[in-house]
Length: 443
Image (tube, rainbow, N blue to C red; front, side, top):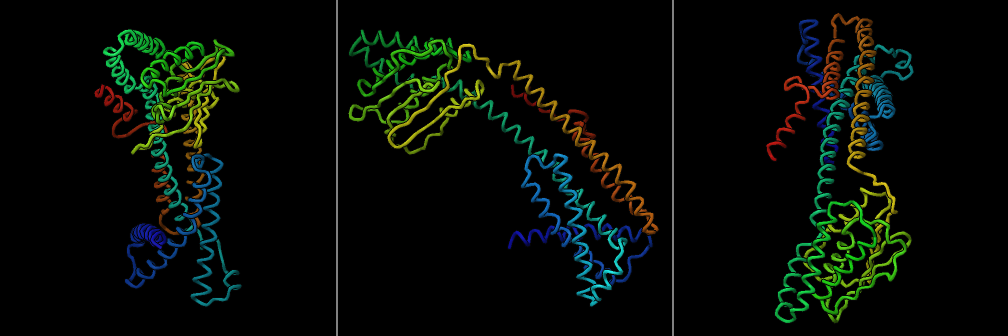
């Protein structure tokens, strides 16, 4: 009910605006507005037309927007919507004429049909089309603004994923816990402390060496995983049972560096690890994937996992291959399969190819914007003479065609400003320059 009242309110408000414009045109053309009763009657008719035409056009418009979503402003979908608006407007106008003449005034239906002329529909149809055009232009502007926001969210999300990839290369808690283990070993078993320190230094050396690489060999990553697990074994003693393949099918195959560490740390972080509940972690090769499996015995925690680690793995592999990271889990077991990549894999998104791809997308988007503007301009140029011709044959004595032509022309100018990125108040590319200045200040 609230929605219906809101829509009626919008229709009524638009009707008031149309009425004020029509009254201004009437006063300029004939110098008088008529009696108060005539004004009230005209206002009632105006509001009736406005509400009905709004209610037959807006649901159709929303249907097309919902159906086509991001593709709504493609020319074929826009034409469907436009011709649908014409058909619904003509139908609405005919129903209104029947209602007013046949039902309200009691005129015979067939007599009404025989006396109908297309001239009776000119003014109302043109007003409805102009209002619809303004509505489309307004929605187009909002659509473009929402697209800009979405693009910024995607850019921010990509930057966040890359940041997470660095941030999670080695969990800070692991270093803290390792230092605690080392402290206790120094007092209890200095020889073991020495071995532990050596292994820990190797772990961090590997991190420093591999962090800037996109890929490492499977053999290197497995050796690191074994070294990493040896540190965890000292920390948890016999509470972790680690199993790895005795022989790799292709040691020179490629994987994302430190991906195994992230998966192993993820298993330890989210499961109970104690002598009475041993954590079994197995690494195996299956169907071209490296699979890390552990028995499921989740910790009782107050907060649910944010899933940053798994999202990190997915995002990093998505930059390299179309093959997905496969995650399976049930009450007994949890496993993650990461793709093993070929020795001679061509990385999908090197810096040059990424920049080239972005340039292509920007150029394509630019061409689509130009095409949309030129189509809009051609339609405007074709319809302007139509308005002038209708003004001429209506013999109104006043150039009312100027109003839709000028109004629509303002919309075309707005479209041109958006397409060519020119702000009449701040100059060309003002937005980009301002963003760049603010970014430089933040740095």
